[in-house]
Length: 215
Image 1 (cartoon, rainbow, N blue to C red):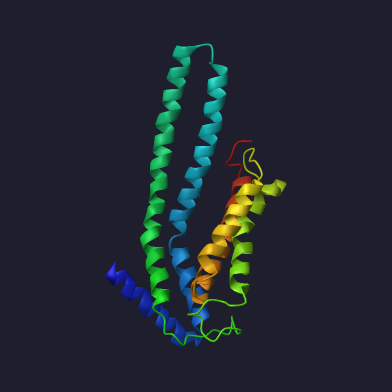
Image 2: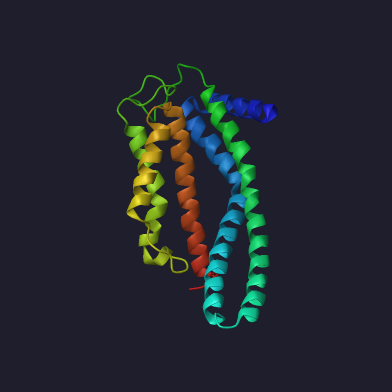
């Protein structure tokens, strides 16, 4: 972990020397890491899609063989085995945690006088945003994936729309992790949130185009 931390610190300072702006350096480094993790992220999304499909099929099996216990047990065993394989594939997403965490702490180690043309209203992006603009932007970014379920084209399977309580939870959680955090961390969260949103949109378009789903 120490090697990775030193690497990110070096890259962050290198990008600053290249761009002359700490905010832009954070964005470039964050996006570079996310691009490297893209194959893992895509695999995770595919496995989540498989889990949704298996869950739907399992409910259909239960209804179809509700009066035939032996047949029901036999069919359910097949789907549970397939589900276990899919869940194992989802574990690859855990590989992202130490990498993203190290990037997070590398940003925290930035010099106290770090500034960015992207956030001109703060004297240093090591301080929280006293105008709460960065937290507000992050709230909008964090809510954006949930809005896809309201757009018919982006629905895969028969997805239910996001509930009001989920929206409220996302808003509160997004504010809690950014309202007192350094602006630098807010830039990191906004960048990774936008990357995830674009990734989700492209993934859903691909799934719909090649009909790799079940309605």
